[in-house]
Length: 153
Image 1 (cartoon, one colour):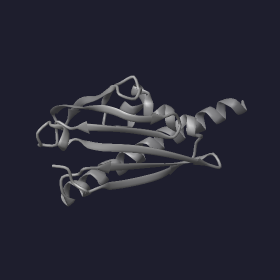
Image 2 (cartoon, one colour; image 1 turned 180 degrees about the vertical axis):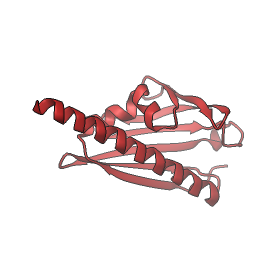
Image 3 (cartoon, helix red, strand yellow; image 1 turned 135 degrees about the vertical axis):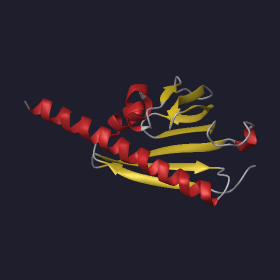
Image 4 (cartoon, helix red, strand yellow; image 1 turned 90 degrees about the vertical axis):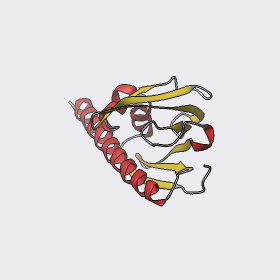
C-alpha cells in the first residue's frame, strides 16, 4: 500500500510531562481513555506492542513494533489493526508517533499517523485520535488535580 496520507491531532494538557508520560505508558491508565483497550509491551525499542479488546461486540488484536522511544518526549511504533480490513503485511502497517512538548507545566501531545489508506480513513482516524486525546486529557488532569489537593492538605 505505502501512502503519503498522514493524519495529525494534538491537545494541550495541564499537567507535568511525567504525568502525561505515565498515562501513555501504563496499561491500566491507557485502558481508561483508549476505548477499554488492553496494552502489552515493555516500551523498549524493537519490542512488540499489542493492543487488544472488544469494540462494538467485535474482538480485535492490533500489533506492531516499537520503532523509537524517548522518555517524556516520544513514542513511535508501527502497527496493523485487525479492524482495518486490510491484509496484515508490512507495507500496510501504519506508523504512529506521539510527541510531547512541555512548557510552563503544560504538555502539548501531538499524534501523527502515517501510511493511511485513503482520505476517508484519515478523517475517521483523526476523529478517533481526537477522542483518545480528549480522554487522555481528562484522565491526566483529574489525576493531577487530585494529587495537588492531597499535597496541599
